[in-house]
Amino acid sequence: KIYDGYGDLSNIQLGYMGPLIVGAACGAFNGFIIGSLNIPAMLVTLCGLELYSGLALAITGGPAINSLPDAFKNIANGSVGAIPIVIFIFIAVLLIVTFIMKCTVFGHEIYYLGTNAQASKYSGINNLKVTILTYMCSGILGSIAGIVITSHLNSAKSSNGSSYTTLSLLIAVLGGINPDGGEGKVGGVLLSIVLLQLVANAFTIMRAPDTTRTLVNGCLLVLALIIDKVTVTRKARRS
Figure (cartoon, rainbow, N blue to C red):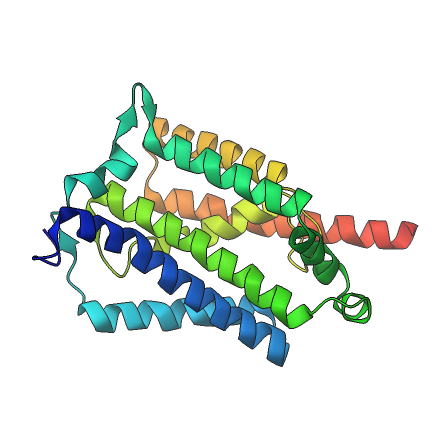
């Protein structure tokens, strides 16, 4: 047990809520820095990654926390019938994000802000508020991913998930997300996830080493960025 004396139920609730609150706070901080100081988002988030990883390492001291409760471990390793629980989590997140982006004012404001921040400001949108809320949501989603990874590994360590940084960028760019903002669909990201999972499965079947996977992912990311840039340039010339 972790946090002895609180009981299993309290432990699990703390394991859920703690990361979500921390993720939301870290995301809000990133959003505030980006929105108030106009620092490039990529730079702030990468620096934030190093900052929060360093804090996690300092707090935990480095060693992993093992032997997590079965109820927590079953989040990623359990199933309902023949369907893994993580599938339900994935579908729930997918539906919620799709609803926010398509059916809410906040989702439309994200697109407007990403397309033209100056025009968004003059149209009455509070750019700072939208930016903070956007990165807060991103932090919550990152926390959900962290909970799933920790449950799957049955081990909590500050370095968990560090290998997914490049992969996350690759998924977004391949899914049609414009690095400059304003463009992208949830459906495109979903197709990107499926495609890269197929590629990962192929590497597993071929027993390819991790270095080869990293090299291929890096090459795909560079290629995707080049294609995106060329596409945007051609659209600008036509218009």
